Length: 270
Ligand SMILES: [Zn+2]
Image (cartoon, rainbow, N blue to C red; front, side, top):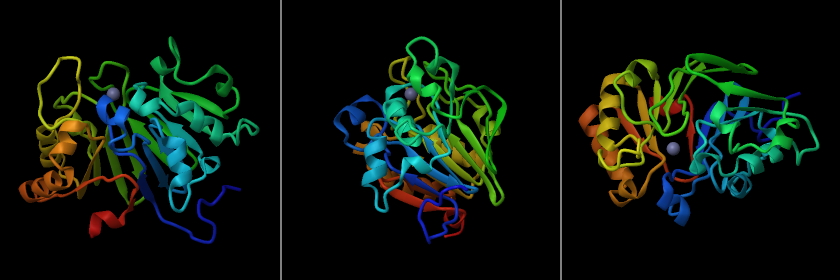
């Protein structure tokens, strides 16, 4: 039998943003947490991008989130701010390695040279599945797809979660490209937006605020959430930027905060 996350408290779908920081300076100084995200969708607990601090944040959350109730850990790409706690959380998912359970989903380049998942843990989990462009994956009753490989220095995917009430499209780290609009149609659009301004060094392949605005205008979700903020976004006060985006686009735009829980699909209605 599947473990209930909160005993006696049957919850609907939710996303808890344990950490909303991204990029090197914010992560190194923990100006915002880099812990990543806990999702409970269609009865499945999964963790997306366990960056540094993920395991600690699970247990320091109120109510605490027990990693031994996770069915899966999903990694968008191997960069440290997404994968730093990959091993710690995988071991916790397997009840300190004593129980063969849980799935890990990750790109191939997170497993080959310089793997971000230790070899011994690959045998402790129930399965390791490789993310590939255009593929669909199933965890219990939950289906998600990885529509396209992103423009990012390492192999990177975003996600579309297919739920009875609609779709969540999550655009993780990437340089903007116009096809994102077709690939990430969703009722709820979540965007990793580390940068306030575009441009910058060519190896920085991230969305900026103007990219986020364009994506929100074109995709027209019922609500949008911005997260994974770098220094330039944090200095500009993401909550004010989100309010301005809401005014300009007519779409409800929310700036994620550390520890924020979003109830689904309620957030689309409020
Ligand atoms: Zn990255």
